[in-house]
Image (cartoon, rainbow, N blue to C red; front, top):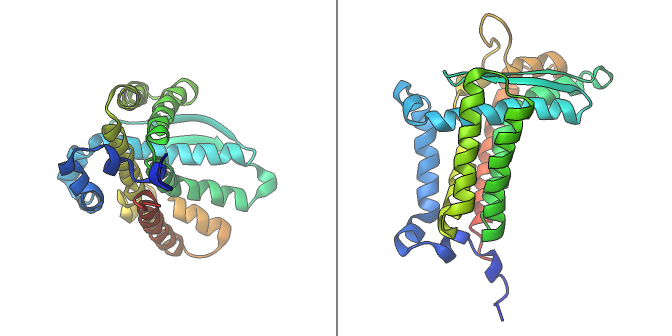
Length: 247
């Protein structure tokens, strides 16, 4: 008979070799800090390139899926080789100004929310494996339904197949570590373009997500940028606390 709470011990602590178990939470926190710093450096974009593409996919899917949830349309998604992307959608006019503001916020907040689910999935082998399979499968599904740029059609299913392969073919502790690492990367991806959160402009053709929120909710863009940066950090910390709680 199992002791109470044993099924909910961190998966890495139950399955990993001793040296990996010792790294555990400390390594993930160090990885989060290193990732945040590297993303602010030109060289870091090359080192973290696959995670940059995944972060862009999380961001743009956040816009599109929120538009769908609020009664709008998600028309297509384009992801480019330089790590940028754009989601084409329409919002529900009957819910204005709330709908455009929520859709704008769903871009920056989509990755940390997805990251929290991945981190929580690491609490058991079953959910860790399922989390990887769902993520990999949804990457493939999104390619069929929404992705329409040539780079995205190649890169997104490739990421999906890699993640699916890990979820199907690797040892339990590898799956647990991978789902946690991807969760951390998703949470800290908010800081990938920290200047974007505190910018009104998004280049010559548009305005930033936080500027869209300013237009619809009146408070200044830098307020919304700061709020989302803080919220992303809180989501990461609380998700790690739950993932590593032994009971």
